[in-house]
Figure (cartoon, rainbow, N blue to C red):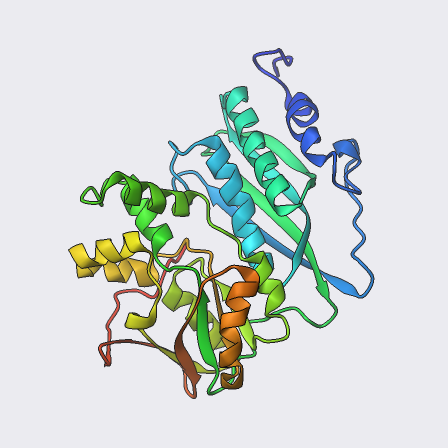
Length: 331
């Protein structure tokens, strides 16, 4: 027999009404989560862009991670997918599979994290589902955005001779996880804190994504690892890529890690969790990168080129590197 909801043990509808309905108050078409579905109307002349990512405790985040950090990362990794297609966010759907015995205060902290990022990224909750599970905490979020008709950025447009560009700094997310696991104790507290923050709170490059819609020939967000995600562009475009390790932008903290032990370079290139954008542009547009960087307040680095063939070559001091893996794989 199911126990009746109490103040200390709220039921499904209490959680929806008290914790999650407030997240929908500013979202048109959500109806304060009082109906089984929501309505959504994209602006005239645009088409919808939809993406879904899932996160599971022990796989995508540590059980000890703060509830607010988990919520914000869940939302941000989906917004990063919208950014990679040049889309503007509109709303999101959430499915939460709470482990038996999850503290209601933990759920409230999770919702507070969502609320914080809703304000930052001008997005609201449209609906979803919340259930209990005997398994680990599992979360799934569907983000919805819009893009001008026929203007969505794709992975399949890279051409021979295009320049390969990345945003921000690479490898911080993977190193942040290593920091949480106690593998970078030689770093000072400030550098450790920086890397951990980059792991917990990736920055979706939404402004950059919309700014390069008429410039980039292909685009992807770096979630599985720099090498693996460039390979996805190559596969979709039937092209190859080559880039120089020396040109890959590193944060000051990541540079210190590599200076201490060059073996960490593999994690930087293949570890994933960066959620920066990797994109290609025709060589004739190289002069526009500086203005684009200023316009979007995002550091950009030209690291290599697209060429005929297949696969990705990574050069270090002009010699091809042998990497044990290209990036993260679930299976």
